[in-house]
Length: 292
Image 1 (cartoon, rainbow, N blue to C red):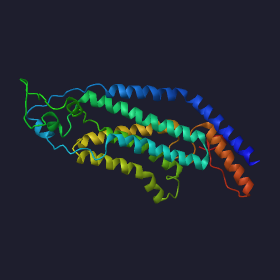
Image 2: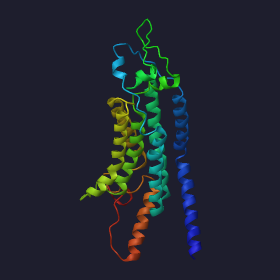
Image 3: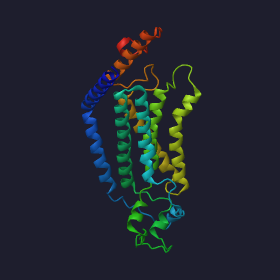
Image 4: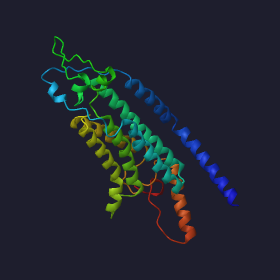
């Protein structure tokens, strides 16, 4: 009997997964399109902004190296949140919630990545350590218009024109901002009589993103304004994408994704569980049962 129950559950999960994938197939197509766009834009050389003698002192900070390499950003901003989504799935077995969370965070970071790289290439703002990228031996060379003539490694120099906005900050706030909203809903942070411990737990991902931004300024990889705008891009995109898949963390039915089937199944499960236990607990209000 236990085997039959397990088999039935697996069939239901696979059927639900197929249904939700079909419903969101255009969104998954957009994920692929955004990936190609991101890598395509990444290969484009940035605009080489004029850097004259009177400006060079502002970008003469020492080369410090990067405390947080960019390859680690997808690990803590995408992979770690997905691991948390999987943990939530193991607890509730809601394939709709898992699917929408994974799709949402992928769209959040990819939209942010495309916007960030496009802006970097269009603005061509020099990094704070641009001088040493351009003149590794310290010998300054300028053309007849007063612009720098760099003799450093080409790829290193070109990367020096990609200061605005900060990719570390935008990616961090896009992924961890999405996670923060997700935790706010699942922990019911904004319910009446809220819990400060839950609030701090939900805000912790944003604290991590904030610290990443601080490191980028301290490493002289970005100006403060670069990090600020990167954070704004990531937060705005994360919020907009999150609201396409889940309700705002403020309503009463914040725990359930907007997928109609998911909310219906969850409410039915709660009612059944309460009936079996003999406990009379009012089910969460939702649009289907008269909620507002």
